[in-house]
Amino acid sequence: MGEKENLVSRRSFLAWLSAGAFSLMSGFAAFIGLGFLYPVKRQKPPALFVCLESEVPLVGEALEIRDLKGRKVFLMRKADGELITIGTVCSHLGCTVFYRPKKKRFECPCHDGVFDGEGNPVSGPPSRPLERYPTEVREGKVFVHFA
Amino acid sequence: MAFITEHERYGQFLRSVHQWGATFMIVFLLLHMLRVFVTGAYRAYRWGAWIAGACLLGLTLGMGFTGYSLVYEQISYWAITVTSNIITSVPLVGGMLKHLFLAGDEINTATLSRLYALHVQILPAGIACLGIIHLFFVRLLGMYMPGNQKDRDEEKNITAREGVYHFFPDHALSEIAVFLYLVLAICLLSLLFPAKMGSPADPLITPEHIKPEWYFYPFFRLLKLVPGTAGVIIMGLIAVAFVLWPILDQYVFQKVDKVFKGRMEVSLLVGFLVILVYLWWAVVEAIG
Image (cartoon, rainbow over all chains, first blue to last red; front, top):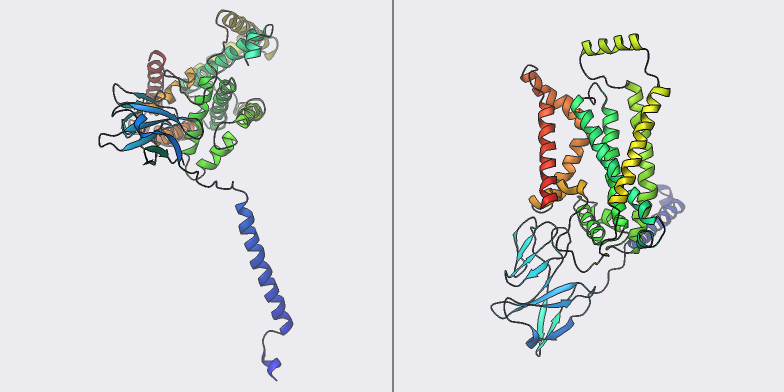
């Protein structure tokens, strides 16, 4: 009596259940599989010791150091004594900027972009500042987090 | 490249001929397009030939870009860097296109292989295909005859009087004569101003005075004048307007002409203004 009232037979219900489970699992596998198309994200590298705090020059001058890719990076002291690390890749189209200590500014040779001593755009086409790397001083040693 | 230029017998001459030939190709393409523009030969539904021709100019500039990038001098390295960052500005797919262009996130050895494949296979194949399409459209609607009905009648009278101007030998002979003069000019220029090797690519330092090849000067100037990625977007819009010029002409400029009751040629005014700005920016960068 009870079996006659059921709209779905036990056999077809099991078939639907297994098809549903198969779809769910294959969808899950495809979701993970698609992730393999993209490169694995590297873990954030630890902060790098670059120099002693006493080696950082006075305000207005810059200490040239290298990032993990060997590119030029400038370590500078702000007027309030805070240390900042500024990248030299122009935020406009990727050329390398020069630091002009006399003018206390960065200049890009490609499209005439100019940044102030803290890497903020002043004139020319760049609209974003130069990249800044988090810098910290621990027991008189300077560490930079290169992302 | 250094081996071909500095060690191989006649290598420098061969490379110079290649370089001067490329320069001549761009000069003659620009002159050809100027002639087509001034005579209005893209009108009367000759859109197909213009659009294929404009794309051919783009591919030829691509050949120029990949050509001087493959030398792997400082100008090459920084041109690839700037171009890859321009590509990144493309909405939505910019990052993916940059990855495809560089074969990685930054310039590497595979980038050169990719540019080489573009320079010797993909772009030449594109030029061959578009060249055929270009000629097909020219043949489909026939050569454009400048002037009015009176000029065309005059042309017919000359043909009736002096006979048909045959492809062979008339046209072929004049083509051979022009070809020989061009070969001579390219050889002379190659001997007088041979191609040399510049400073090798240095990913750490951009030279203080860097410029692209002369045919990119106006775009280089535009990127200096317009802030942020707006310059890149404007460049894209200019390229689209250039390719679709005949359609713009028919549906916009000629409509404006009608307002002035046919006493104006707005397309000529707009075109000459663009050419003047193009030349002005090119000169500013050349002497700057």
